[in-house]
Every structure is written in structure tokens, then in C-alpha cells.
Length: 369
Ligand code: NAI
Ligand code: MG
Image 1: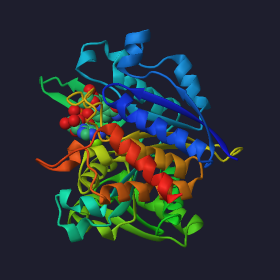
Image 2 (image 1 turned 135 degrees about the vertical axis):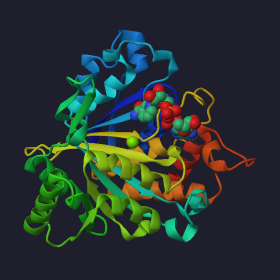
Image 3 (image 1 turned 180 degrees about the vertical axis):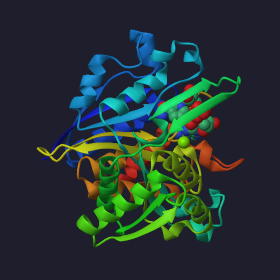
Image 4 (image 1 turned 180 degrees about the horizontal axis):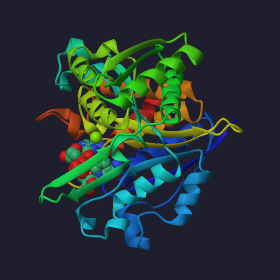
């Protein structure tokens, strides 16, 4: 039986609470014979700072490098607002992303039929929605040099950020998008602004070539990023996979996310390059939400974003697509049966706790087996 090493980094606030539910589920998968899982755990963020004075230790970094996948909760909170900049909680996450070379950020936007009413759009526009935004994560305007604010001779200031992409950076993110699309409906929309940006021209050219030379069977559409934002709100189901740069991806993935309801429902994955020898990728899976200090410690957090992140690990790191499908179905069924945590329950309606939701999903997995 396949065997995997999983590093859990629960972090701060509700991170540890939702991680407990994932750990239960991993143990269930192990006992049910889906695969063998070795679980390790370590600190990150404020909890690592409290224990070690850093946001992640070298030891934890080494474990992350060695793991088949990292499951990350969330970091931060008012308790650490005044810690030094280099050791602030977020630094632990940024270090992980950088050292593991995680250049591809996958953000699914899925609308469960039972929650279609919670969307800001009409039910028929979002019911059954299932799109995947692939955002380039390590290049573009957030990192390009020069990046500075200078004071001019006349006393005015001038700020510069540089949008910068190389052929290699665009090629590798395009390949991730086409690979993913092949396992879905094989349709890719590539979003840039070639009408006004040189990086957009290069992006368009490279994505077109990767498509022609390596993935000619896929349907490729080029869309201007501003139009893409409009289309996501007008008719989101026209898309399957959307691939885009760091900045546009940041914005488009947040737009797509809100089509589906609560932050507590949204998983994500960040993938690195494939090791040519083993075919494995470094990977980190995490909910989109933060540490939610306002509800931490109350057993109210929705664990579905975290559990869905495990589902993505099953699919993209462990090759356990059947188990991932079953988990998606279990989540849909539990929601379909009316179970809701506070964030998705609607005013006045009954809500279940974090652990009740986690247990119900495991019970449904059991029933489906
Ligand atoms: P947040 O995502 O923690 O919370 C925003 C709102 O959504 C809150 O009202 C919260 O209660 C609710 N919420 C979030 N996740 C939920 C869940 N699973 N179930 C039910 N309700 C949920 O964002 P916020 O408040 O801006 O940031 C709080 C802290 O988290 C800050 O210290 C911030 O820096 C950090 N943060 C960390 C992230 C990470 O670790 N990747 C990402 C975003 C924020
Ligand atoms: Mg954002």
C-alpha cells in the first residue's frame, strides 16, 4: 500500500482547531486502508515565536522539505502584532513558500448546491460551479526589481513596482494549468493584459506555444484580465481552469471565491516544480482563511476549508483521486443533510460545532465506503 509522510503545521487561532478535524480524517483514511499516513506536527507562526522566538524553526523547515505534503492551518493574531518584523507570524508562511519553491497557487471555487443561496449571485448562475484559478505565485509585480519609493529633486516622491516575467516562469505555470485541465474538462482560459502590458504580450505568446507544442488537445481561450473579472461575475460557469499572473490571480481568485459563500469553505494548494527523478512536487495545502481571532477557542470554526485542503493533497500529491472524490461527495452530502457551522448557518438557524462537522464528514466517508 502507498505510504505518505504528512507534516501538519496548525499555527495559531482557529488553525489548531480545524487541524484536529483533518488529523482525525487522516487517521480514518489510514485505518480504512486508503493509504498509510505518517503524521508529523510542528509549530509555525505566533505559536513558534512563543516557543522558540522565530516564526518557524530550521528543524520544522527540514521536516517540510522532507514531507510528501505540508498541511498548514493559519497564522497570526493580535497577540503578535508588535513582534519584530522578521519574526512576525506571516514570515513563517512566506519562508515556506519561498524555500519550497511553491510557484503555482491553486484556488478552486466550488459552489455546493446546498449553499447556492449564500452566494451573492443568483442560484442558477452559481449552482454546481466548479472552476480552478491557477495563480503564478513567485514572480510578477510583487517581487520585480526595481521596487522603491524615491524622493525627487522637486520634493515629490516617486514609487515604482516592476512587473517582470521570464519565459521559464510562464512556461511552468502554463504546464501546471494544462495538466490540471486535462484531469477536468480540458479547457483553459489565460488572462493577461497584452493590450497595455509587455508582460501580457510575453504571457500570451508563451502560453500559446506551450498549448500548441504540448497540450494541443486542450481548448485554450485568451481573455483580457479585466474582462475576465467581468465574466466571472456575469457567467462564471463558462470557465474550467483560469491561468494568470500573481497580481491578476490575487484579485480574480478572491472574486471567484466570493461567488461560493463563506471563507470557511475555501481550500487552496501551492505547488512547486516536479522533481524529474521522482515525479513528485513540493506542496503545501492550506485554507484561504486566516486565524480568525474573533472566534478562536469557541469551537465555532468551519473545518471544511481545512478538510478540503486535505482533499486537494489526496488528489494532487498522493494520486488518491477516488478518495478525494469521495471526500467531496461526503462534504456535499453533509451540507445537503442540513448541517451548518455558524458561518454558513444563516441568522437564527441552528449551528453545529467544529468537531461535530468534522465527525459528520468522517461518518459520511464511512457510509460511502
Ligand atoms: P480571517 O480569515 O482570519 O477572518 C475573517 C472573518 O472570517 C472573521 O470574521 C472570521 O471569524 C471568519 N472566518 C474565517 N475563517 C473561518 C472559518 N473557518 N469558520 C468560520 N468563520 C471563519 O481574516 P482576518 O480577520 O483578516 O485576519 C485574522 C488574522 O489572520 C490576522 O492576524 C491575519 O494576519 C491572519 N491571516 C492569516 C492568513 C494565513 O495564515 N494564511 C491569511 C489571512 C489572514
Ligand atoms: Mg488576496
